[in-house]
Length: 124
Image (cartoon, rainbow, N blue to C red; front, side):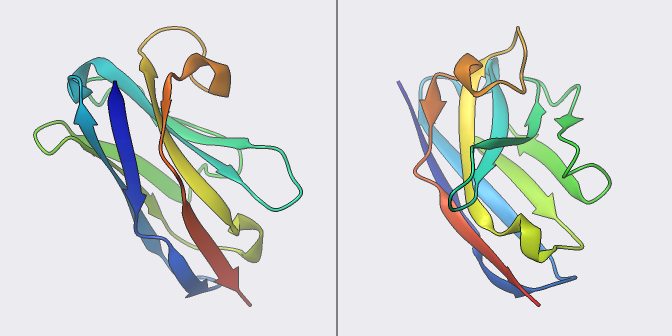
């Protein structure tokens, strides 16, 4: 089992930045691919970004490219999502997830463990 706890969400004005963190406990964090997903009210869950077990091959969804950066610190069992140039359409609950480092990382079904989410609200 892996327990994931997100933090860092909040209210920010458009154009601002936030850094989300996801702290893991339980089984060895460093073997897992880590992903970020988000879900806005009334919308389906959307892939944001993932990163390989050793920090390699970060991959971003279209909405995140050029504005968000995913990183991880295996010594701290933590994955981060730096979000810059935030837009109102980035408003959502953000979830981190852990899964095996193979297969299609942009698919939620390929992740075994999920956090409870942290809310991000971007105002005009």
